[in-house]
Length: 369
Image 1 (cartoon, one colour):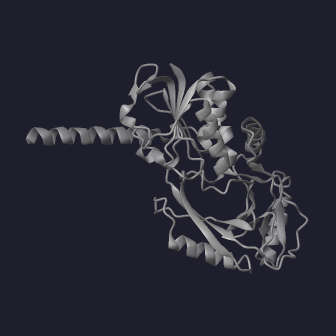
Image 2: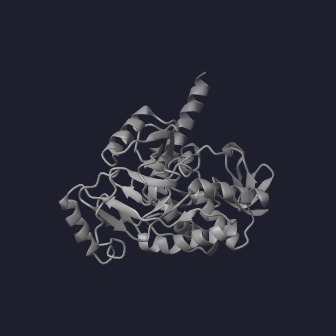
C-alpha cells in the first residue's frame, strides 16, 4: 500500500507532492494533460491587486511560504523557473496617481508600493502619467516547472501519463483502490476537470476561460512586467505575453478571434510600435464564486480530498494551501473556514437528495415498462 494517489499535476498538484516528498510519503500521480490553466498562466506573483490598489488575500503569509518553496524546488530540479521581475502599473490619470499614493500610506501596502513614480522614457510605451513600481514581485515559468517536475516523477516511477477513470475507484473503510494500487488517501487536484468528478462535482467551481497572445515586438525593449488593462510580460528575444481575457461562458480550450480582437484593442492603448502575433493560447482557470480555494475532505469519504480553486493567483496560493491540507490529513490540524469545503455542505446534501430522487424515478420508470 502507498500513502497517496494524486490526480492532476498543475501548480496545486506539484505543491502537494512536495509536501509528501518532504516527509518521505510514497505516492503516484495521474496526469493526462486535459487541463491547461497552469501551462497558459502568466505565472506572476504579485501581492497587490492593481485594478484597485489593494492587498490580495493573505498575500504576506502566502509569499513567506511561496518564495522559499520555489527557491528550494529550483535547486532540487536543477532548473531555473523563478525570475525576479519588477511589475510597473501604468497610470491613466492624475486621479490614479493620487489613489496610488493613498494606498502606499496604508501599513500593509507600504511595503509593496514604491512612492517614487517612474517617468516613462520609452517611446514605444504609451504612458503619459508615469508608472508605479510594485516591489517583491516575480514570475514562475509554469510550463518549464511542470515539464521538469513531470520528468522528475517519471524518473522516480511515480507518474502515470493517463486519464483517471472514476468508475475504477473502489472506496473501502480505511483506504482506496484503483487498478493495482491501494492507498490511504486520494487527492484530486484537477482544476476545472473537477466538474467531471462524481465525488466533488457539487462544489461551485465556475471555470473562467483565459486567453493569451504571444507577440514579437523588436522595438518595445522592456525588461519589466507592464500592467494596464492588460499585462505585458517579457519572455526574452523580443517576445512578450499579452493577457489576459476573462470569459465565464466558453469552457473550451480553443483560442478565439473574439479574444484576439479584445487583446489587440487593449494593447493598442498601451504600446505604440509594430508587433507580430506569433501564438495564441487558452485555458480554463479554476475559479470559485467566493474567490477562495476549495480544500478539504469529502463529507462522507474521508479518504478522498480536494485541492482546487486556486484561481488567478495559483503561484502564490498553492504552496500555502497544500501545506494546510497536508497538515490537516496528517496531523488533524483544522483547516481555515474560508478555504474548507465544509462551507458548501448544503450543496452536497442537495446533490445527494437530487441523485436519490433521480434514482427513484429511474426505478419507477423501469417498473412501469
